[in-house]
Image (tube, rainbow, N blue to C red; front, side):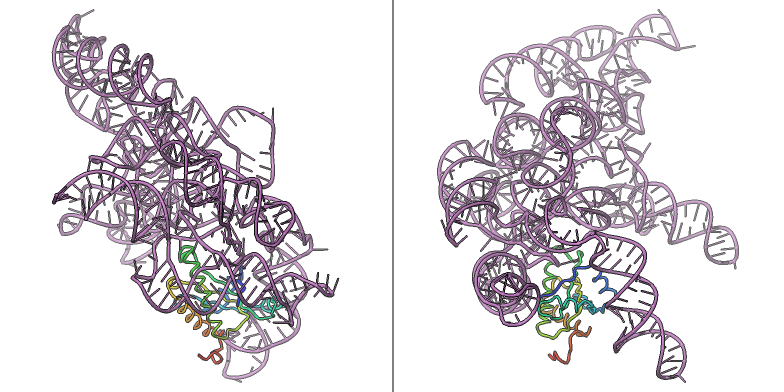
Length: 130
RNA sequence: GAACUAAGUUGGAUGGUUGCGCACUAUCACGCCGAAAGGUAGUAGUGUGAGGAAAGUCCGUGCUUCACAGGGCAGGAUAACUGAUAACGUCAGCCGAGGGUGACCUUAGGGAAAGUGCAACAGAAAAUUACCGCCUUUUUAAGGUAAGGAUGAAAACGUGAGGUAAGAGCUCACGAUACCCUAUGGUAACAUAGGGUAGGUGUAAACCCUAUCCGAAGCAACACCGCAUAAGAGAAUUUUUAUUUGCCCGAUAAAGCCUAGCUAUUCUCUUGGGUGGCACGCAAUUUAUUGCGGAGCCUUGUGGUGACACAAGGCAAAGAUAGAUGACCAUCUUCAACAGAACACGGCUUAUAGACUUAGUUCGUCU
RNA sequence: GGAGAAUUCGCCUAGUUGGUCGAGGGCGCACGAUUGGAAAUCGUGUAACCGGUAACACGGUUCCAGAGUUCGAAUCUCUGAUUCUCCG
């Protein structure tokens, strides 16, 4: 599953101010309903709802190598979560990495991300009964 | 055996599951474009996929645009000598100076006698030096004098003897320094020896002088396509629709505010998108080969003390665009250091765990 | 990716033809005066670290960090670090 990246800065600021927020040890998750989802669905070849994802790793957390690693870990975690559970589509997701993310494994990050998405209501817990 | 010096190499490996970028091939039922052929998204397969510093952007080039007859001024850079190189502020060799017992290391290393400036405090005086002292005379003064004194980072070559009114490179001997001449060695800087001259402090990473070099900006350059009644964002207002969360009022309900979308209008702000450049290039045909070109890389040989040059053979596949190499598991000796390409190359500088190789020095012990 | 600028006491800053400079001013803070008490006003002091002292005194280092030039560096030169600004 490929994700469409969020490129515009105003979408990030919108997600920060108006979206729902969940803070955990290694990452912060923002979620906001994507009002362009219908447009994107029309543009998409399979006509499927898609979540748009933005990864934010600030320069304070390390050099280019560490930041790239964090982005990969976050992407891998999201992939695992989407594979195992039924995640609702049509949202703007912004994942902000924190300091603890640098040394943690992707499985732990995936567990945290799942908990965050459950608390934000993006995963239907009754369906994904694990 | 210990302690070092110099140069170089390497920069975790193997297997499994899963996942990403690019290139090529195949496929394309369903989706999109097209009248169709077909193309594309997708799917499958194969190949390939980050460093020694990719970093800092400190130098030098290619490349691109602008400017340009030629020259000068201004501004900037460099600075022993000889060479290497496309070029360099880089590199090699060598000389001088400094450091180390030594292998060896460090060195912005032209000119202060072209001129100007500065040298605080202290000191008589910081550059045509006379305060104390010493000596002479016509003794409330003038002259001579750099031996001795005190200051300072720095005070007018050092020691001894002669000399003198007192002194002084004033003279002599020895020694140190700078410059010039001659001889020998070296391409040269320079070294050694002999002779002569001189005593004019430091600072040029102060201005400056001399010699040499430099047009400016940079891939966010630039070219093409497309597009200006355009695209995007924010705010306000109006109409309508949807339903949940929150808030306020309230005894409850109704109604309202707020939030979001769509439509329209007004105001403000921004300039966007795609392709190439760009990953060895060009041409030819046999479509995977050949030829040519590019400061490309590796190996061997020759020349050179060396940087490097020449010849022959072989090898060439990162090319993203919110930015691709990851995650998890197992084993090995340690979950390995510094760290991520963004047009390319030659250097320099800075960061760096561990392992290995070669050459050499000093000290200790044994033979 | 590229081009530039800055860094001085807790905060904001002055200081560069190199010289008596650990360095001036304002805000803040502490103490005192004034007041019944406060505010305002006036006066005095006030950087950090290390050593040292019973406590002071006193000594050393530090102007982002490290080297160099110089008799002498906040200032000049080089190399790094951090922060900020700009780009068709």
